[in-house]
Length: 568
Image (cartoon, rainbow, N blue to C red):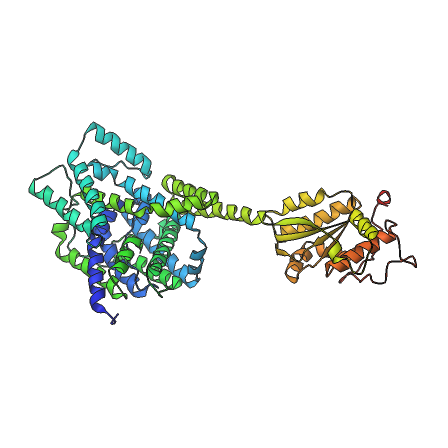
């Protein structure tokens, strides 16, 4: 923190100016009021800055968390939200102890992009009532709230509120394009507040009175009897806090050179922040992508910037509460609508949609689920669908190709013997994974083998084999065996033996003397079986050739006793 304090202090001041209207807006949008948003930005911002795993992360109330909190406020009230935040903080500490932060790397980019798009839509729609200057109906479904707000506006239009919200949106979006370094959000909010005060625009409802300072720490909201019903929403809050915070930390790493955050330590810091914030009347907090990006772009180099951002907001809470209370709600709605629009990276969405059909499907599905359902459910749905599509793609890589026996035949053989072998023996090379997602297709292909007496399966290129794949292999051996076709295997790797042995497939192969170390040995074993069955001419002494090597680790006889008489 002592390397370049001047740059850190300047960055912290800039972030505080950007964060002020966002904290006020998210506090109002959550249903707990603007003071809850400010308390969260101050307390959670300071605690997470000290104990988190990223030196550049800025934490506070966010739009994604607001989306989760609205139905919790509607159902459990203010005390329930504070309790949910406290429980979620304890859960985050548990995730940190369990070192769960590393699993963030397994979330596909299509899920993250769809999640971000859905959140942006929800944040924008949540602001419609305040932007139109109408009272929002008591409902936790954002589409329903938006529809009723539009109906109310049509019946009783409020052009003042609409003009203020639209003006803030235009100033923020146009200003960011022309002068990216200027915090146009605070400029637009100040201008909107001055306009309403100078022209006495009563139609533009202000935030209302704010307490001059933070409340003293209190546990008065804790109700042990409500713990059971509060656990599910607490899980949702903890999951979202972990997801958004780690994603924001990754964004900060990507904007710098040589900086890497500690995901488990970041979860620990966010857990402490979410325990502390409710004690001062704050809402659950996460790492904030937009504020973190501003922090990095303005030259922050350490945690001092995030700490100073919290200190500046604390000064505003204690010294400027009367001024802040006059900000019109419509202006804050415009800030959040503009923020939602800027959250959507059109280039990233276009690239993701063009990448593969699976990526486009996951992106759209996650976004729609975020808008229509719960955010955590949306992420779960996106992960499940992405996983299923990935498994299907991996399963399709598995191939079973028929291969020529000639390169693997030991010794010199005539064309006539090659023809006889080709007539009675077929060899297949299995490439790729043989697991539950594609094993049954393999069974279907193998079961269609006909007009041969011996099938050799070359297993050395099987990359993955699970219990389902082992069962399918065993089933294929038994099916072909009943049809008088002997199945021999070669090149079974050590990693495949456990799965084969667990389902009895390895024992079946060994009992019949069908497991061989190499393909040439399996071919020699197949020739011996066919000679003893009378399907190939025997050696000069009436037995199998002396070059016939023994089967690897087999315990059963090397005969074709189980070849049906009609097969002979």
